[in-house]
Length: 76
Image (cartoon, rainbow, N blue to C red; front, top):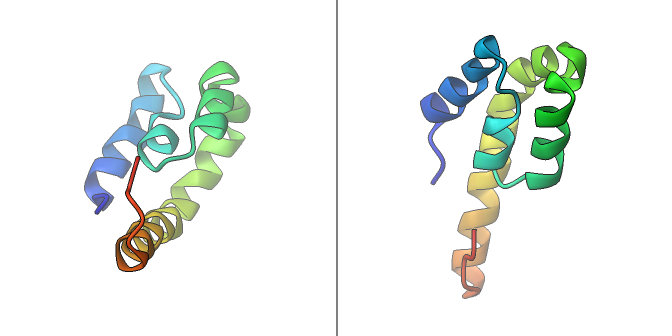
């Protein structure tokens, strides 16, 4: 289970110039890399993620639970 407060703390790292860590944490490495290289899509994506973060956390936790119920190994 991914933690909401941990994801928000990683989101806050953008204040020191390290954007996208929350996306790596939530299992989205490609967009995390994009955010890292473009400073959170020039800041706009980072602000939008502030509002999308709760749904991204719910989706990741739901996918993990579904993997567990279906008996698939969780590789994340």
